[in-house]
Amino acid sequence: MKSRLVSCFITFCFLTLTQAIWLDTNNDTTIREDCALIADGILDYYDGYNYGGTIGEFVAPYYWWEAGGAWGSLIDYTFFFENDTYVPLIKQALLYQVGDDNNYIPLNQSTTEGNDDQGFWGIAVMGAAERNFSNPDSDEISWLGLAQAVFNTMTARWDSADCNGGLRWQIFQWNSGYDYKNSVSNGCLFHLAARLARFTGNDSYVEWAERVWNWMYGAGLLTEGNEWFVYDGVKIANNCSNITKYQWTYNQGLMLAGCAYLYNYTEEEKWLNYTKNLLHSSRVFFMNKTGSMVMYEAACQPGYTCNNDQRSFKAYFSRFLGLTSVLVPETEPTINKWLVDSANGAAGSCSGGSDGHTCGLSWTNWTVGWDGLYGLGEQMSALEVMQNLMSTKRPAPYTANDGGSSKSHPASGYGTTKANAQPLSLDGGDKAGAGIITAVIGISIIGCGVWLIL
Ligand SMILES: *[C@@H]1O[C@H](CO)[C@@H](O)[C@H](O)[C@H]1NC(C)=O
Ligand SMILES: *[C@@H]1O[C@H](CO)[C@@H](O)[C@H](O)[C@H]1NC(C)=O
Ligand SMILES: *[C@@H]1O[C@H](CO)[C@@H](O)[C@H](O)[C@H]1NC(C)=O
Ligand SMILES: *[C@@H]1O[C@H](CO)[C@@H](O)[C@H](O)[C@H]1NC(C)=O
Ligand SMILES: *[C@@H]1O[C@H](CO)[C@@H](O)[C@H](O)[C@H]1NC(C)=O
Ligand SMILES: *[C@@H]1O[C@H](CO)[C@@H](O)[C@H](O)[C@H]1NC(C)=O
Ligand SMILES: *[C@@H]1O[C@H](CO)[C@@H](O)[C@H](O)[C@H]1NC(C)=O
Ligand SMILES: *[C@@H]1O[C@H](CO)[C@@H](O)[C@H](O)[C@H]1NC(C)=O
Ligand SMILES: *[C@@H]1O[C@H](CO)[C@@H](O)[C@H](O)[C@H]1NC(C)=O
Ligand SMILES: *[C@@H]1O[C@H](CO)[C@@H](O)[C@H](O)[C@H]1NC(C)=O
Ligand SMILES: *[C@@H]1O[C@H](CO)[C@@H](O)[C@H](O)[C@H]1NC(C)=O
Image 1 (tube, rainbow, N blue to C red):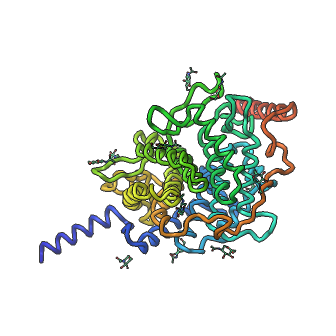
Image 2 (image 1 turned 60 degrees about the vertical axis):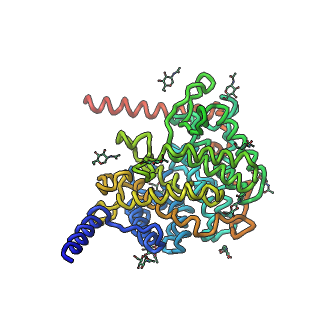
Image 3 (image 1 turned 45 degrees about the vertical axis):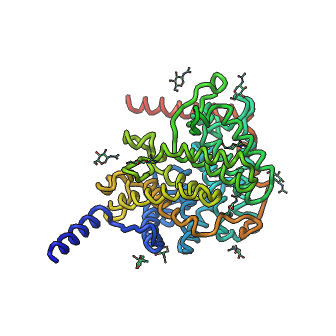
């Protein structure tokens, strides 16, 4: 009896010390309760409802794109747990940031926004359409129409002039990275096209998905030997011959889930094969701890170099794995094991902060608990990996024929602001504009220098 008490006490201490939130992956109630705590933690980084905060954006230093990612996470949260608490907040945020032409190129972001940034907001509203998220009040604007607007303006920027195709990273010529074609920008377009195809049943989107896939494959961004890796991107110089070979979880996930949507819609064997190949190679993002497969950001976590953006990538990867397991059911056993093991690791890391359930970056080390790191990315990643345990227990993403009520606006996105819609054949006027910005920055730097000397 005494020894039972002692061991109970030790177990209790162990649990309270290492796991401030208790997760039983077979018990939907604990999943829901944990996710509610973690979701509330996400909003610690949001002050859009306070004076001085901007609706739809998270606090500095989180970039605008990550807000698109976070609203996407919370849309799924409302759907998985049938919990409407955050619906008005999410809806207000998604609608406030649409920009003048309803295409997620708000003027405020023109100094930093790239194709990938726009793409993540596009994926959020695509998710809203597929989850039948509470529709906007106006008939002019719909979640699906916004996703179509993002797709339309992205395809208008398709750049055949360099390397025979592909999207550049940047939308605006004055931003650094304009000379780079990266997998996340092209992957967002591929992924969005695949989802639009399945939702609308319009095969034009399949053609675009194939075009993007073929270009990425041809450029060497998708394979190496027998592996199906997704590399970071490639500089345009020398016809895109110098590939930057970093691998990120979210790129693997964008392509993987895109293939799963295409297979689910077209039932063509090649997309099933690509799904399986990309899934097999995804194992590089899991650390095998005595048989337990725990997700990690392999390119930066071991060296402790993950920046704020990279700390959120596991969130999207988890979301894309969840979608894949629903759309291509034969992937479910593999993905379920990865999600269960990773969710257990993530729960073990959520023991930090003054609230006692702030989540850390590393999930592979649950005997130490929280690793001392925290932020929007850490919180979103823990939420997504845990809430995706519900993905196969709730309805599959809806389509227009089956549960989705969002209206189609296939020609949306083209407005009055020239830079938004045009392919980037910059004429003299635009170049002059970019030149003026460069000059203004130059003058400011000189001005600062003079001021410092004085
Ligand atoms: C699931 O977890 C809840 C909350 O911790 C608990 O009350 C319930 O008994 C658990 N259900 C099962 C079947 O273990
Ligand atoms: C609904 O979500 C809110 C916000 O995360 C949470 O506080 C609340 O507990 C949730 N309700 C249920 C029944 O899970
Ligand atoms: C643009 O920035 C201003 C100033 O920070 C802010 O008041 C406004 O709400 C922002 N608009 C959008 C759409 O983010
Ligand atoms: C199908 O999608 C294409 C590409 O966006 C669009 O031009 C066309 O109008 C769409 N067709 C229908 C019937 O919606
Ligand atoms: C340039 O690269 C593209 C994309 O990989 C390829 O399709 C094209 O054939 C290449 N052109 C030349 C001249 O090598
Ligand atoms: C390829 O890119 C890397 C990193 O930008 C650079 O260090 C290297 O010199 C480049 N190689 C060639 C052949 O351009
Ligand atoms: C798909 O993979 C199977 C098994 O490797 C192979 O037999 C089949 O030819 C592949 N199909 C396509 C369309 O590539
Ligand atoms: C993980 O490691 C265990 C041994 O600890 C091994 O039996 C198992 O095959 C490994 N699993 C994978 C997927 O590598
Ligand atoms: C598409 O997804 C649905 C929902 O999970 C599933 O029932 C169906 O079997 C899938 N279709 C194919 C071809 O895998
Ligand atoms: C686990 O935690 C220890 C102590 O904080 C640290 O030294 C080690 O690098 C961590 N290992 C991994 C794989 O994160
Ligand atoms: C989708 O939303 C519409 C409008 O709110 C509603 O009429 C419909 O029942 C919903 N569909 C599902 C499957 O919940």
